[in-house]
Figure 1 (tube, rainbow, N blue to C red):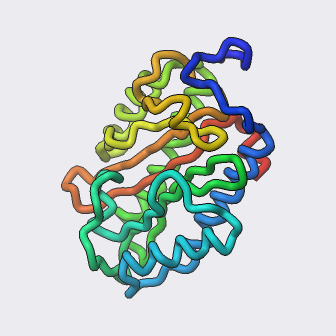
Figure 2: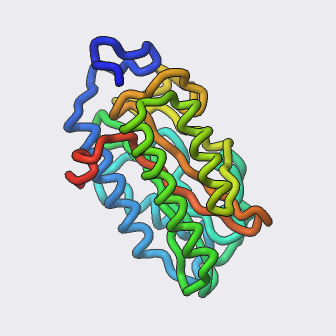
Length: 231
C-alpha cells in the first residue's frame, strides 16, 4: 500500500486533515447510526424517519453535510441512492430498512450506512447480515492482497453472486477527507486503478434481492483492523 509520501493524486487531503479527527468523525457517525436505528419503529412513515434522523444528527453535535440523510424502508431499499424514495412507505412489523448518513464533525467528513430488520423474516435477516459480512470480506482482501479498487469491486460482485444477491454498482465507493473531499477527487473507488490507501475511501456494499423486492446496505471507511477495534 502506498505511503503518505507516495499517495496517488486522487488521495490527497486538505489542510485540516487529521487522523484523529477522521476517526472521531467516523466514531460519531457509527454511534448516530445506532441511535437512529434504535428510534425507528414499525408504523413509521419513511419521511418521518428521515426527519427524526436529521434531528438526532443535529442533537449529536454533527452537521448535515454533503449528501442527504437517508432512511429507507421496505421496497425503497432497492433504489439507487440518487433516485428518490417512493413517498409514504410505512415500515411494517416484518420489514427491512437501512440508514445512510454523511455528517460532518468539525472539519472532518463522516460517512456510514447499515441495514436493520424488524421482525423475523429470514431473507431480510440474511441480506442485512450478508451486506456487512461482504464489506468486511472485501476489506480483508484489501488489507491482505493490496489490490486495486477496481479489483475489489470485481471481487465484491463475485462474492455477492455466490451469496445469492446482486451487487448494485450505482454505489461504487468514493473518497472521504477533511471537508470537502469533492474539491480533491470525485471519482469512484470501483474505478480506482491502484490499491487504495487507508483512511481515504468509503467502501459501499448495496446488495439487491434478484427479484428486486428488497435490498441491504453497508458502508464504512477502509481502515485496518486496529482502527476498527478502537470504536
